[in-house]
Length: 113
Length: 113
Image (tube, rainbow over all chains, first blue to last red; front, top):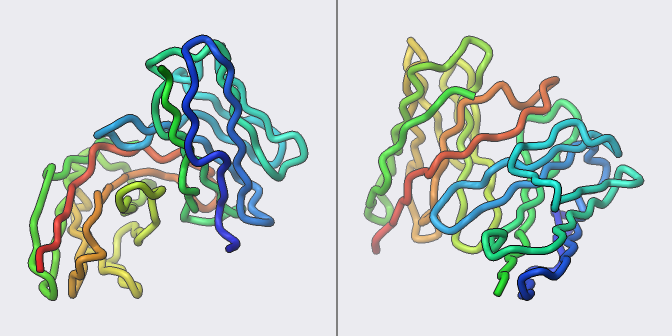
């Protein structure tokens, strides 16, 4: 399968723990996005990378959140000191330069107990 | 991104056309109308987009009013697999503008046998 992949698909953690999610975009896609989706709501933008550069961060991305894309390929999203309010689906999407559509991965569902 | 308004839910009989409306009365001249859908437990999937003209692809047709203040997504022969949340987004995302997507709550389309 050559689509966007995310790992893990599900994560259950205790409040206060750190978690890290990985996103592998479609090969050659230089644009990468992270979104968060809570139950019953549409996805909300978190951050955007063009190659390895993080060009935009939402105000939703508090200082407990950090994202990287070190070599312009895969990306990681880390949440430190998780809180119950962080429970959500974390979605990654990628697109090639000058494309109109974003290709989404299946998401990582985080549950913070 | 311009605000969009969609009905919260719609029903459709299998085999019939599903017509999903979207209001975007404050859309600006450089904003496109995008439609994505999200099937349960999956990431969003791009369907179609347009600027001024009506568009058709293998999945759907998009009808945009002449004043661009509203649009309709048409699934010509709905199947059970088209049951999903459909999101209408007005954005200048795509092409040379990387654009984050601003999702609303969408329309839950249920296709009945």
